[in-house]
Image (cartoon, rainbow, N blue to C red; front, side, top):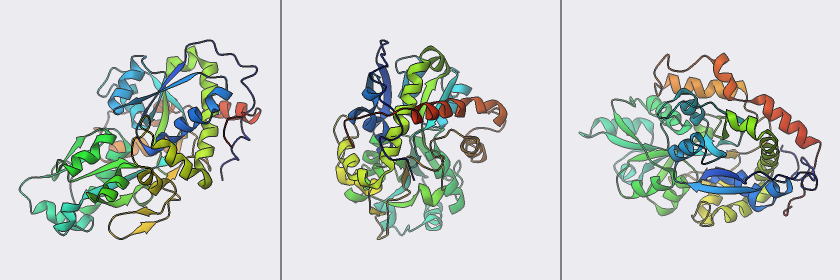
Length: 364
C-alpha cells in the first residue's frame, strides 16, 4: 500500500528559497500524467518551494527534442525515450536519465468495430482475417521505442502475425490516435488511457487487452531529464522527485481517483470526458465486447517499489525492444553500461530526504 498522502514530505517552503527560473515540465494528454497535474494543482510543488510550469505537448518526439535542446527541464516520457536519447535513435545522442518511474501499466490494445463486424473476436481470428486481405492492416503506436510498440508486437506475434510482414505499424500522437481509428485510417492501436476507453464510449473500437493482460508489472512513464540537469540544478531535482513521489502516492489511493479524473478532464490537461478517464482510474473498465473488470491494477502509481528505477525494469525494456526486433541486435549497450540511465541512487536520496520532511499541500 502507498504511504498516506501528506505523510512523506516536510514543510520545505519555509526554508527552501528557489530563485532559479521556473522548472518547465512537459507532459502529454494521458491519464498517467496525473502525478504531474496533482503535484501542480494540489500544491505539492509550491509546498516544496518549487516554481513549476506545466507544458502540454503534442507527442513524444516533441518531448524528446525539447528535453534535448533545453526547452523543457523535465518531462513525463515513455521509458523508451531514454534509449532513444542516449543511443541517438532518431535524435542527437544526449545523456539522459530518470530517477523516478511515474507509473506502471496504463495501456491497451484496441481494434476497430468494423473488424469486429467482420468476425474478429481475438488474436487468432484477427490473424485469419489479416491473411484474407490484399492490403495489410494498419496499427498505430505512440512512439517507435515505447512500451506500446513492444506490447503490440508481442501480442501480434502471439496471434500468429509477423509485425514486419503481415501488418503496417505507424506512429501517431496519443491524443490523435482515436480520431484516426474513427476515420478508418487505423484498424487498431496500442495507446495509453483514456484513448482506449474513448473508443469504447464512442463505439468506434473495442479493447482486446490491457497492460495487466499483456505484461503485468511493466514500467510505463518516467520523469525524463538530461544528465546535465541533475548536476546544474541538483537541489531542485531532488525537491521535484520528492514532490512527485508524494503525488504518485496520492494518485494510487482509490478514494482520490474520481476527483483526479475530473481534474484531468480540463482542457489544459487531457481535454476529454471525465467518464473516459474514470473508466480506467476508478472503474469499472469496459472492454467494449461485453467484458468488464475492476480498475485496480490498470494504473499503478505507487507501492511495492513501483517508483524505483530498478534494474529489473530496465531489463524488461531492453529485452522487449530487442526481442521484438524494434531495435536491431547489437544496437543497444549491455545492461551494465545502460544502468546509468536508471538512477536508483538519486531516487533513494530523494526518498530519504522526503521521509525526513513534510509537505502541507492545499489538498487532503
